[in-house]
Length: 241
Image 1 (tube, rainbow, N blue to C red):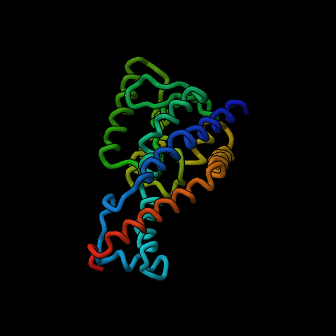
Image 2: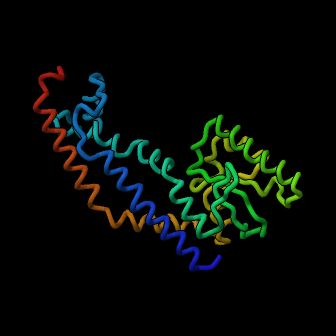
Image 3: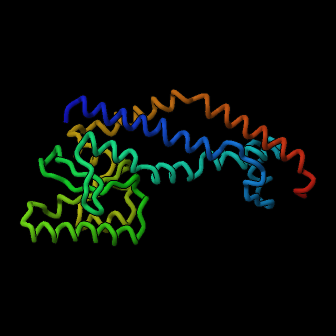
């Protein structure tokens, strides 16, 4: 793969983070109201005191808001919208596949074989049903290849996990890997680009996008916690703490 292609992948990743992930995260936090939280009255004071050392309204607000900001929703958004990035990757690194269950077809930079790849976001992002579905798609393709005398082997059908390490793979991925290769994180990107450091270049590029927005999140957090704190003051008597 040329350096120009690598840079195009990096830029598409930055664009995905800049135009999809960050806006979705911000939209999920804007205009939060007290009614949007499922408050456990037995725990909220403890959590505020644990976090801030007191149970003042602002501390209570932080105990409610911080888990929402740092919680699983942004990881969910990353996974749900990953197809946008995969489509860009397919255009640069190979071809978007027309085969059911295959996201991208590319020439493996390490062994020179054409790979038929289903892409996944991270090392914990599939369930048991997904395993059966992936096996079904790959087995169907393998049978078709045999009938049509196509040069497609078991190791040419892969699952590519965009981030993470092999030791982080869930048991569901490991079950797939017993038959079909699962490439994760740096290994996956090396098979696409031939560059063992490309994954780390990608991570650095995402950090550059973070630096573009390093004050926006801080200001939004202050705005949300102050607004929520005012609500808590107004309705404090109803909470019965």
